[in-house]
Length: 411
Image (tube, rainbow, N blue to C red; front, side, top):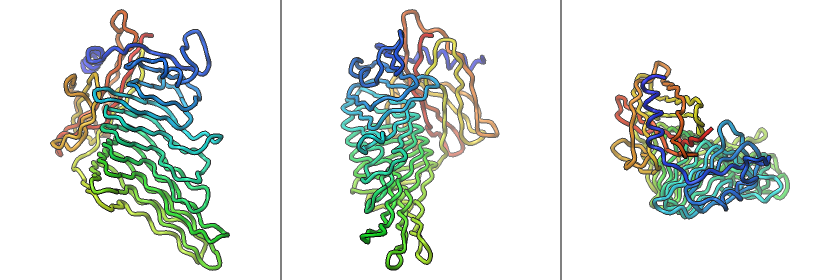
């Protein structure tokens, strides 16, 4: 390993905080497995514990204590919706990382994840929230955030529920109410609206919003948002045109704010219809009933690595951004979520335990890869957790980019 790699490994071990315990969840029981369901592990865990989930399919769960619930390295984990997180207090943090959360067709339609009444930091990373192949007769929000002070979604994908019945607009991919939300490198698409009914005269309905903001503040970095497809029209005793597509973002309430950096916003396609009827209009990029929208200057920076590593395992840290710009890896024992106006981006790390490692310049493709190997943990230590974030420096100044929570384990 080079000098930079050695500095990263040393910083990982020095900056990390030991978790109280690590619990293993596997739906294939064995001698090293603590629980067969995530909910059982959550119920048994103490504040600050880590729950490591192996490949499998698991029922829904709810958590109201500060935990790290993490899919194991290279694991494929599917969770039945809904996942519910609540009552994470100020000074505490919660992490959900590496899951596919999907609607179970045998259960009533619901949110894929509902996060509410959290004054502490909640990080959701590398998750996919998918309503599944069966459409909804309602248009519940896929991701719903309510009364939360510091929510970060990092590399999250979310699709709005699409309307399978008649007379229903497409669902919103993310809805945030009375909260502060930070998006990094997310892909969010509104749901498809219901089509015209061939009997009963019900018209088609519009697509859902990728992001709906109600009396909340959202900071988006490197995120792609597309409104949902409008419902299709039909020939019903004359033409019924397709419905309009949904907006990429909808602002409601006088205190709503959207500030975005290097993000892409696209209105949803209008619903199709049979000639000579017309297709629906393309959705608005921003459907702004009130509030403010601000575009920040600069480029998004990104990083990725393995979320879980054991002693002796390799970890490739991959950084990207504008070619030729310099990048720095920052590490901290605890997360936060604070928009910093001077860098027009979100600080996701606790500044009290902040460590920074200059890495160098991004190459001509805008990439820098730093290979590392995790050194042994201190004797008696079974698990360490820490939080990382990339910072970039270019002609537009310094900007904070995406980050990742790391779980470091014994073999």
